Amino acid sequence: MMHISSKDNPRLKMIRRLVQDPQAYRKLEWMWLEGDHLCTAARSRGVQPDLAIFCESVWPAAEFEWAQSSSDVWVVPDKLFESFSGLESPAKMGFLMAVPQPPELDPLAPTVVLDRLQDAGNVGAILRSASAFGFRQILAMKGSAGLWSSKVLRAGMGAHFGLKLIEQASLEHVLALKLPLLGTDVHAGSFLHDLLFQAKLPRHCAWLMGHEGQGVSAELMGLVSQKVRISQPGGEESLNVATAAAICMHASATSPAVF
Image (cartoon, rainbow, N blue to C red; front, top):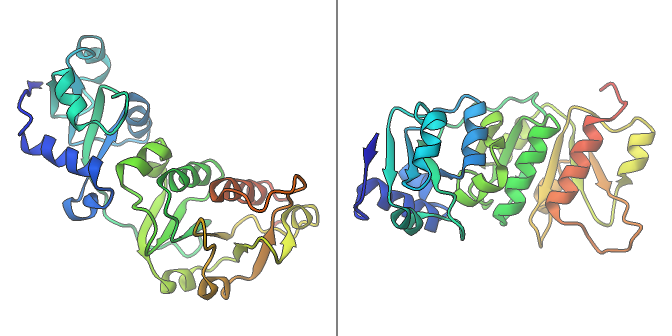
């Protein structure tokens, strides 16, 4: 364990950049996980960070549980931690680790395709739902929020480490999938509950979720084998994309269909 007190420490300066710039991890090839909940979730999936950082105020109580979390452990003054924290109320601990190498596409893995989703909270929430409902692969098309950015990591709450994440995905990636591709459409297609009731909703499939304002691109929607609508008896014009994704994935996961 080392005590670090300089705000000009190169690693701390790098963390500040990772927090401030959601695309910085792509150039630096490092990511920052902040908070005991997120770090615990990562550890539970076998993640070993390159560096664990703790505030002085929590280290005496945290040492027994966290001292072996990394081969490199730093303790810093609380004020210094606040200077690079990405939270309004700093969580007092975090992990710095290398961004994993992108995996190979699995053409048969239940998949969620993110088409230019911009909001980090939406993207992280979809990753959590995907992990919960057995969709183990994410294709993030070019223009989507960075999957390994600090905000998406926080919203994902550890789901990242149980998923195959492919960023900067292209049309070729989608075409390589050997599963039914389903796309949500507010105005067209079969209602989700009808497909579920009729046992026509596939369990193993790829769901296509589009940009918050523009929806799914015409090019990608042209590839779907089934357009799907979600019934909204309350009369709202549309659902938040993360909410729609959760509904669709849960429906597939519980479908009585055998295909």
